[in-house]
Image (cartoon, rainbow, N blue to C red; front, side):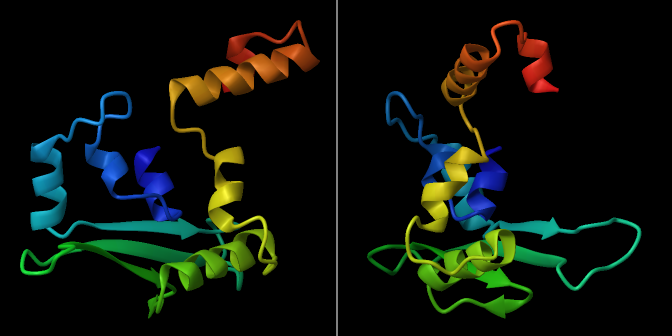
Length: 142
């Protein structure tokens, strides 16, 4: 889920920073930065036939130890480099939600669709059970 969230504009630090303690896993951080890992995500309507709505995005971690901020993320949609993170998120919002309105931002909408932590899943399960008390955990996961 962290990889999908990252592809959808999440922070690279979520890969190597412990959520509760804030501790950094140096091994993971070094692997991602020194190897300049690239993450791809493809969106298709039908695997059997191409569509004009199909698209691919990728985000690449770049590392330059000389810079004050050595870790940078380069964002691409359909092999076009996005000039800014804001333009990247706007392209995703247009392609996925057919919307270019300013608010809510793409990143404000994503947590409604991508649940990364057990707590987020538990909160959603509780909300669903409040509406339908006879629904079990298995049914929600399916």
